Length: 491
Image (tube, rainbow, N blue to C red; front, top):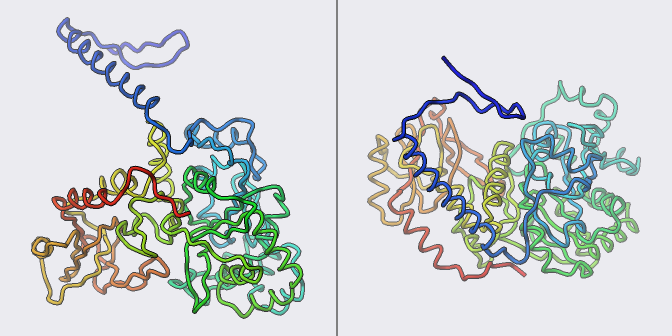
């Protein structure tokens, strides 16, 4: 017979079990070991030095965000109260998230449940005013000139949304965006007009903010690292910070990677834009990307980009090469601040990873921590229906999977490989990749996504990936040897 029991507060604990004296002795020893482990964790948590005075604590119930909900109300929507960084500048930062009606329902909810829960003040701008899960989404085009709307055909989508609302999207097609998507996507074409009005509205919304952080709906922001990074700069200086990108000879901060404007910079650029509104509207109409338009407006007031790679990333965690070198810097020893092209499931997973680290008192993560504690545990000698983005295709057909593995093993610098439809690919990089039914054969660094797939690999079980597990330990040791004791910051 099952005997259930409750304590005096009627909390259910499960069935009681009868035990022998021997069993009691075993549990006593286990209890002793458990006590030692708990003591160790307590000592570890409280004696471990915190990085640069940034500590964590549960978000206060009195903090509010631009959504109109208190932080306590927002937290109650999640599974548990998050641990949030305590920083002297947290309340000086406004986070601005830019999105569009065609993606908002898919991509925004996870941010309300994860990354934005620790942000004291944020606002979301889109091309459709609406409410999503109790959070207000603001119309970024409200108040723009009728002349611009009439002269630019891209505003047909905006007019359609204002007339029909979200229901008007049901019979329209929107395929991808950006360099790796459909360039004739009306949502993508409209997006470039959002940047200058968004910056202007952000300043009007929070004129006393010292920092303005701009992200997109598929951007993951490591809030604790963002705060620690901005503490090292002076907001009274005109600063424009982000990941470098070029269109022709024009250097600008990539919007999807996130970028930051100091209070001094945002005031200068908004004054410049408002004094030359017609000229910038015309320039935007003739341009290709809104983040480049903003960079030009900033350049017109002598505010140049401060490149912050590898803190700001254009890649998602799944395709990031932690050993890549750009601007003479390799990510490994630096702190990640943003990732781009992150799917909602990836955002949720990385948020859980961050929270778990904070719960045991670890310092804010470096790129190497993300690799060793988040990526490495997911790597195996053989994984089915998985593409690890090995791009070095071998000339001869090599199969089966085991033969491809042997080929990689025969190359001293090969760290991973994949096999699909008789084709073997190897790589000297270590990349997590993603679940896939087709193998990528052309990955666009500009778009941070696959743009061409191998024919004949669209069937379940047709793509397999593997890593040289015996070589990864040496890889980590060699990468770690490049790091100093202190965290590297690009300042």
